[in-house]
Structures are given as structure tokens and as C-alpha cells.
Image 1 (cartoon, rainbow, N blue to C red):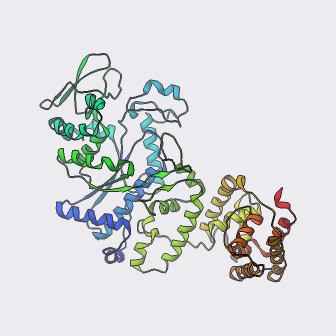
Image 2 (image 1 turned 180 degrees about the vertical axis):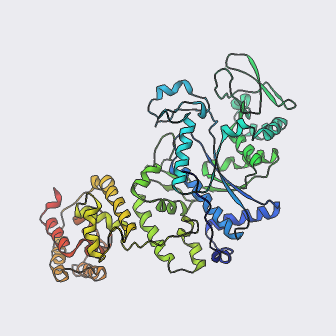
Image 3 (image 1 turned 90 degrees about the vertical axis):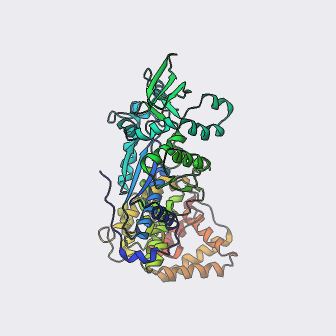
Length: 536
């Protein structure tokens, strides 16, 4: 699979974009001003990837959010200024530690500190190296989402000479770079620090050693190699790479990057990146700093640890559009990224889709789904929530979607998987999510006397609604019974329904659930709960 072409934009949005307030437009306006000042005829967006571990959702988030800003920029400039998105992999970095996710740590030990593209692939024989495998996983994922991007490998750029001119400039301005870096380091690190990291001709390792000489005229560095001998290497051709902080600035200067976003953990280093870029003759790009993603325990997610959700895990239980929505919302707020966020993200997505259909151009530009779909928003017909489908799976004991469609087609007269493919897709996700993530943790409880009387009343009064699929009328009945039995606050009545009948603390609008599940089926569900059959 190859990157998708850049989708066309609807000119109907061009005027409204000029005053749009959503955060991608705020960032894109900075970029418009930048290009107006410089006279540059193209905007280059960049995202970075460290292939020390398999790609995670945070990696995707950078590309998705950058693409949102790119789309806003295209609208602001009426799509008259060419744009490019470069996904850059730092695959010449040394493998400083062995990820927890590899099959055999022992087999990887001899390759520590070697460039990631010189370390054997520990998973398959399909790829030339550890770095190549992880790069392929990144590209597979970006292609799945249909991004328009160019992939760039640090190994290729260093070895092919694409960085040579700026690397030679770095040798010339070595002292200036050191003057920026040394004040940021402790005394011990200052004594051995160099912005250049030679790759040992003896061991192939990336060496963190001081330079004995930097010869700007000849473009070489001299250092003590691992066998104790003095070795001289050219700074060009991939014989030497730069430390990661100077590397940021070097890359920006070499490529002419206009925009790059990064996580909050880079924020204090951003002035360093900028200054080195300027020392090397470039103009630092516009930045956007986003907050970090956390796992269920509140810890930062990490490629090497493999904590938090993986790319494939999210896509097992929900579509790409729900993940896109999660990335759009509040990027400067730290958010937990674990399984529990998926159902809400799915239902919020469809709520925004429903609202989008009724909005004018200006309002649509503020709607998250515009940015999730980069201006080309679909119009799926989904009158059922994911939460509702999850509870249907539970109460219908559905092992597959065929059982669910028996209920869905009765609720939506004449509906089939063919006429409503989006509902069928959601039903499949619901079956998997419920059986893997909900069912093992379901806990039912017995009703209190007040709750028992109210549930019996609901059971009895539902008899008059046999065959009804009017969710509103059924919801009114549920409300009326809660009030009649003096639940205070009324939400305690709904909480009791969810805990006693569904084994959960929360759930969908119960009237809608009855309409979907069926009145007769709901009455039997209540009878079983009152008889203690849910308690096992």
C-alpha cells in the first residue's frame, strides 16, 4: 500500500476558514504569516518517529494532528500554496536499550548501541533490520489511515549525502554549537560531550565520546575508538551522526522545515533546537507542543515499555475515525489512553456527524469531524449508539452480529447489514469489545426493596407497550416509575436499573434499550433479575 493522494478541498469553505477558531486554524495562521514574510513557495510539515520500539498511538497522533493543521493551512491559502508532509524516522540512532516487546532480549544484547538499521530484525526474516521492521509498521499504519506523506529515513539521508552540506557547516560552527549545548549539561557530561557521534569502524556502534579534533577545513573529526586508537572520520556520508538535540536543529536547517509538533517532554529543549537550526543557517519552524498520553495508571505511554493502547488494539474495537476524534480533542490536555475511552469516543464521533449535517460552512469548520476527515466528511446513517449495541450484546448473549440483527431489524424496520453497513460494522466492534473488555468484569447485584418494587412495577406496566419501538414513550414510562417510587435523586433509579439488569454502573437511555431489545424480552430480563438468576 502506498500513501494516499492529497484529497481536494471544497472551495465553499475558503471564506469561512478565514475566521475559523478551531485550534488547527490558529496554528495554520502562524504558518501563513511565516511564508508571507519569507516568500517561500511551499510549506513543509514534518513529524518525527523514533523506531526504538513499535509505533504507538501517540506516533499516529502527531501525523493526524499535523495533517489537521496542514488542511487548515490549505483552506486559509485557498489551496494555492503547495504543501508536503515528511515523516522522518531517526533510524540511525543507536539501540540504547532493548525493548520489552522483543522475543529474545539475549539475542539482542550484542547489538546494543549499534544503529537501529544495523540491528537484525528480532521478529521476522522479512526485513533487513530492526529499524526497517519498525519503519514498515509505521508506514503500514499511516497507509491504513490514508495519510498523504513522504517517508524519510535518517540512515538514507545521512548516507546518501542529503545532510552533507549542513554537517560540514556544523563542523565549521562546532564551537557555536558547543556554546549552546554545554550550559545545559552537568559538569561530568560537559567533559565528554560532543554534538557529533561517530559510528565506530571497528564495532559499528554509535559512540558517545569526546572529539580530539574537529577539522572544519577537511570536514573530519578525530576521536579515540573502542580499541584505544585515534580514528579520523569524515562528518559526511553517514560515518557520523549528530546527538539528538543538535540533530533536531540540523534537520530543520537542512530540509527547510516550516512546522513540527512534539510532546511536552520536548518543550524545554525547543529553544536549543531552534538556536542550533539558526546557527546552521536555517529558520526554526513553527512549533506546536501537545500534552502526553498516559496509560490507565497515569504513566506516560512508551514504545519500549509497550504500555497503553497499541494501534492495532484500538482498531480491533473501533474505527479509525473515533481515534482521529480522540486526537483532535484538547491536544494540550494530558489524556489517559486505555480501553475505557473507546466507547465514548465512538459515540461522540457519531453525535458530531449527526450535528454536521445540519450546520453551515462556518459551523462545520468548528465541528471536530471536519478535522478528523480533513475536510471530506462522510454521512453514515447510524441511529443506534455504540453504548446501546454493547448492552444489546450483553442481554442478547450475542456471540456474533447475526443474533444482533434479529433485534436491529425489528427496531429499524427493514434494515439489513446491506442497507446499514455502518451499523453492521459497529455491531461487530461491539461484539468484540463486550466479550473481551466488558463481560469478564460484569458484576450484577440484588435489588433493594425499593428497587424491587419499582422494577416489578416497570415489568407490569410494560405489558401495555408490547411490540412498541417508541424509545421516547418507553423512556417517559421509566421516568414516571422512578418518580412514583420516590427515587431521590432520580439518577439512583437508573443506576439501579444498570446494576441490577445490565451488571454495570452506567448504560444507554433505557427507553431506547427497551425499544431495541424488545418489550417482551425486557420484561423477561426483569423477571430473571428479580428471581436472582443474574447473580449466578
